[in-house]
Image 1 (cartoon, helix red, strand yellow):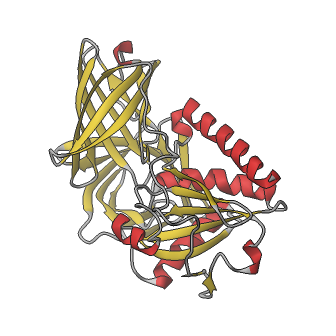
Image 2 (cartoon, helix red, strand yellow):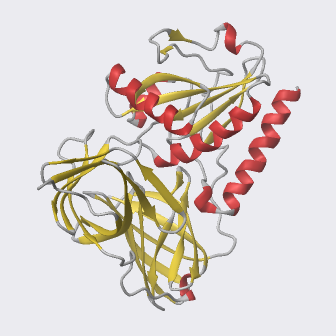
Length: 384
């Protein structure tokens, strides 16, 4: 008898560092072809169209990422692993049950955490970086996100009491858990990511919470006023800013990687914007820093992303996703602090602004402010 994957809603769990990350996905079938929707709360539905049922097992590729769920099918139960193929040994236990149960079995929420929180994250007891937590009770759930100077932690949702909260996200790549306690207007907690990463955070409620301006974090070293590079395009031919295509045009350089969900949020915005403005004197070049130092591997990842998001602008393969290694490919920058980062170059080839990180749609008003600032500044450059 041929094994099948039940259609309908599944409730899944990834076992992470002695904690559990729950999520839902929905399986659909047309003839012999399966597809699914990864449900990251009610804010995000991620289509999955690469699903293979072979023997007694299922293999689900998680969107554009080089990541998959592998599991044995036992009627209405799946048991297997969440695997990042580009990281050696990255295997995390995964289970799922075919059920109408939602992500949180006994949801409850308090408004105790509503508002803005100025927080500090601490890695390895010494490395500190600032953040802003923005949360709001919606029905039985608490929703929101954390912003940092390198980007946001995307759509978070979970449960809360008057003294504790637990928030989660799973978008195929990000597998995040935030647990915290609150006392009066202070907060302390722990952030778990994937197999190993842990950080602590603490802070206080502050409606005026701020981060350093994203345009001030990355800049050209003294003595430089432009960017120069020579990277292979997807066709293998060398691309530079001296190419005729980019002369007398505004050029945006998008430092990114296909492994990075924040970069994908930015790419969705840029792809839509470029498709509407490509007849103007502007070009975008994506500088891809991928998980492996292998041109064919990197090219395949970028081409898959381009197709999924209907991206019309150019890409080059710039290097690997290590920040220090990436900085060596662009030695005129003080550092590469974040994937993504965008460099704005005017029609004369001069760098006018460098924007670090990306505040995506999960950040609400911060995303709207970014879009307004982006459109205003690009229009200024186009009209000079």
